[in-house]
Image (cartoon, rainbow over all chains, first blue to last red):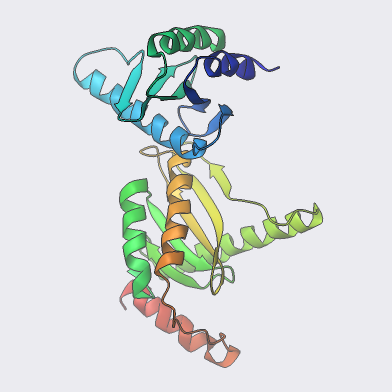
Length: 115
Length: 153
């Protein structure tokens, strides 16, 4: 099992997580993924990398460091983006009933594993 | 942006808005240009179309040699710019999108929006679009007419 698979398994084990992926921040391409289906991972990866770059620019404009976590909350669930080492992002797509606290801890652990 | 067929304009405008691409060429697999954005010289667009169609033809042949039905898009990443070439199926045959992009976007976004462009073009193609084959004796006239449209000359 690769480092990516190991990191992703830790995320998909969290109840309510629909999809998790390692994304190249520079390219917006999927490097590794674990999906329960129903999620267009290529599209989510491309848009997440773009969103993360914009949020980073916004933080810099506000005189802040790059974000440690980006959390988008929607009516039927959410999406979390966490930087994970050099040039990588961890992205998790979760249902609304997911334990987001547990997911954030799992993302942090996976991020440290990949760094 | 210049288009040979008007129904291509709206999907291409949306693609340009979403992808932040610098140069775009939409062409048939034979290298016949359907639309272009960002090219300023006739020679550039003709060279790019010929080279892009040539790369996709080589890739298809490689796929055939490997026993694959077809291969997907081709991305060449440079230091400051990249080239993304993607074939897609249209009712009138295979078309190719050639996109030059810079650091203001990513290959992932370009790929995503090229796929959407292909979907939108398939949805927009008129039912009664002309399907006459490109005859050799009309080729030069059609080429000149297309270039006049694409460059407004």
